[in-house]
Amino acid sequence: MKFYSTNNKTLAVSFKDAVFNSLPADKGLYMPEQIPQLDPLFIKNIQQYSLQEIALEVASTLLGNDIPKPDLKKIVDDAINFEAPVKFLNNSTAVLELFHGPSYAFKDFGARFMSRIMAYFSKSDDKLLDVLVATSGDTGGAVALGFLGVEGTRVTILYPKGKVSEVQELQLTTNGQNIRALEVDGTFDDCQALVKQAFNDAELNQTLRLTSANSINIARLIPQTFYYFYAYAQLRSQGINEVVFTVPSGNFGNIGAGLLAYKMGLPVKHFVAATNVNDTVSRFLSSGQYAPKPSIQTLSNAMDVGDPSNWVRIQDLFAGNLAELKAMLSSYTFTDEETKAGMDRLVQDANYIACPHTAIAWLGAQAYANDHPGTYASVFLSTAHPCKFPDAIDADVFAKIVLPAGAEALQGKEKLAEPLAVNFEAFKRYLINHN
Ligand SMILES: *Cc1c(COP(=O)(O)O)cnc(C)c1O
Image (tube, rainbow, N blue to C red):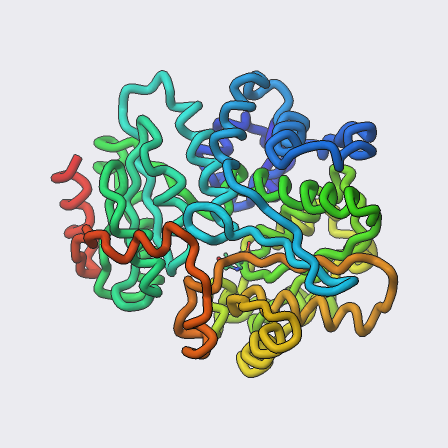
């Protein structure tokens, strides 16, 4: 499969080039040249297959001969080594839990798959692959744990001091091995600016083989399609054929992958993008005008995005056909107060403790069901385990959270981060002196 830039369809590159460059020079995003269809017989019998089997079928349909199937199977089995269960809260509403990977967030799917793809394509290089990543919390943990112990790679994570939760910081800073954490005395934007500058620095690029673990990398998008197919398989095994997915959305990568799965032949009735007050897409769907705004800080901070990068991919999938897009996609937005009330109601009504992002998805699913009653299963995506967001959850509820086994073990580990000022020369010196 070749990948084109959403800004220039005549520029087609190999999967490997799209993975290592992340962004085409024209600042579009990479998309597959054609959207291949999954074998209808596979979809007909999909309830027979495991998550790993589905992942292999979807990945090989998308990638064609780019990676021989036995190699792709190894990558998939190694990357997707945790479950994604659909759990019904009542007769019609279910949650698809995507937080059973090592960082307790859905970003594990993307980060683990991408790390193994990068390692696969780097096998014959003798220079270490240096992955630089800035994080506001969830991305860094997924990337750190995704690349941990992956041969031929080294990860440097920049995170803003005092601005990530305890579990997030422990996931970033206690790994050792090929993972290094820099605690930046600044904001997430400062971290991002330092990483950007590194990619533009000639000397650094000569000395090191730099690559980004950017969330818009095509190798992060592809594995996010797997769990939509797998959720559908789980519904089918219960005799359910019709599904509406509600996705808590920020940069719109997750829901973009869902729409890609739909275009590859997954039967889906509708998608709902649930957002916080960063409502650019919601305003677009009602006005037809794409008018991004600076991001606003909310409780669901992993979705504080005012200009979602992956939106161009969704427009590309629908070839700019607004009517067709609106038939498949609705959006609802919620304030922090509504999010809090949603978290409370989920505990009261369903005895389900959700992170704020997940609560927004549930609210979106409720809102859509109110506007469009029907017999479909309403499946909302849970993107993170609630233990990652202590500041957003009432203390008495938080105390009742059953920690995943690994989160308990994290508490006793030593923090290994090095402090860094917001100073590019200092960052550059660190990278060169610690090579
Ligand atoms: C990253 C993230 C999101 C947003 O996903 P997008 O793909 O950027 O839309 C939602 N919830 C959590 C917990 C996240 O970490």
